[in-house]
Length: 276
Image 1 (cartoon, rainbow, N blue to C red):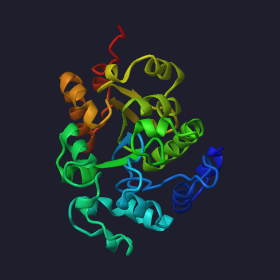
Image 2: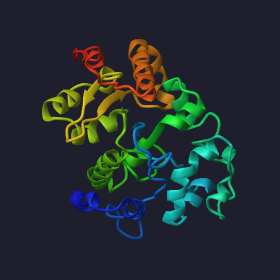
Image 3: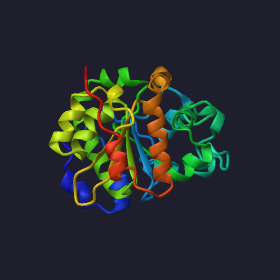
Image 4: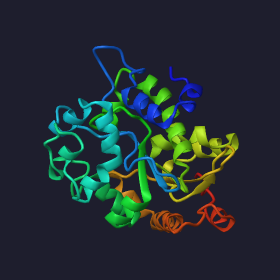
């Protein structure tokens, strides 16, 4: 199992290497399929969106190429993936073996996951790049949530990966943490919230938390906001809960403007709706 005290003591460069080479959950010949560690690289004081896991259809040439690359190439992809997304650089300038293009990558091409995130958060592509970083609750890439949950090592993955996320969030020192979807609620929130708040969150479905804020525990408290997951299947929920969606977008605007989304007036307006 991962030792949180060990990773807390690591210099950032070593932390990134150990994360991207971590195989503690798997036994040969099976292995963890890693991509980048933080989409957008390590920058303090931004909005950090915590998602599910890297989506990667099996045997897809782009994802296979990324997964087989050395850890240093994955680190550099993390730092420069937004350049690819904006069409400013080609993948082979990051790693010479990557002959794929923006259009070949299902996640970052137009209409892909980053584009969906821009739509749901009501941000332009440039605003996303300038103000938002992305980390994943689980570091093992799968085709979808079902494939992740059905993996024979799921219980080990679900126990270990949130330890990495907690340390990443500490080092990113975000102005706002957005826990996006049910898995972030169930697996990341317990590491960040006081016990009473964690119990409330555990008892509330993610649809009842959409746009609600809490303060994290620790010496440097951080503002945490919950949202429905970003996926094609969840678009209806974003549209249905217009009040919550407007709240999400408003508080992200507050954060990227340099203000505190968890100021007293915002916290008061973001109480959890009662579960019926």
